[in-house]
Amino acid sequence: MEIPFLQENKNVGLLLLISGLITILGGILLVALRINYHVSGWYLYVAIIAMIIAIISGLLYILAGLSVRDSKDDQFGLFPKLAAIVSLKIEYDIKVGVPAFIFLVMGVTMILSGIVSIFALDVFGILIGFILGIFYVLSAPMVAGQNKPDYAKIFWLVLVILTLVFGIILALVGAILSIGAGVWGIAGVLSGIVTFIIALYLLLALLSDDIKNNMGADYF
Image (cartoon, rainbow, N blue to C red):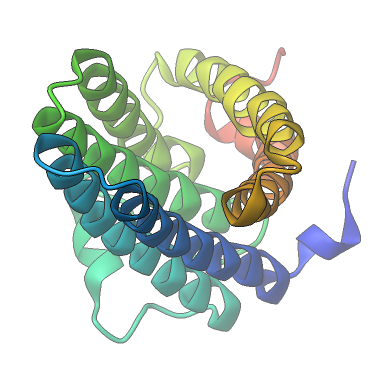
């Protein structure tokens, strides 16, 4: 199954750009709301740290969106350096290279969220951020077909489940629950819709013969 809108780099890049902007907006709103409700001390400190990480993560998504849209590495050469850590050569074909690139960026941003959780003393957030973040980063070269260990098929199955549950189902639920919640709700709805579309793109890519073959999951 192919959706024409999601078969062009410029459209997927645009979605990543929007996702980055919403992530930055969400971080700023978090601190603004804390200040508006006269929150101070430790909780405000954690919110400020979260905002900083949200801005960094948002900028990563924006740079990724520009790279995908233009089908070339960002001018800072940041992503090739990050990709080199897991021996991933970034490519921009819409069926394989772009999904692998997105999983790399997702992994890096989740690791950043794990760092925020350290400051917030959130053990669950630390585990989720680092475990899923490292998992996504390691999966990127497998998705691209540049690394095919025997356990790649297991990674493929987990990626499908995570994309379906966290990317599609929870994104829709989050968007619905955000309706009518003021400015924060508008950001939540937009974020849920964009996340859903990106996740749908990733899910369809994972179910394609190209990536299934790359990850040894042909028989699924």
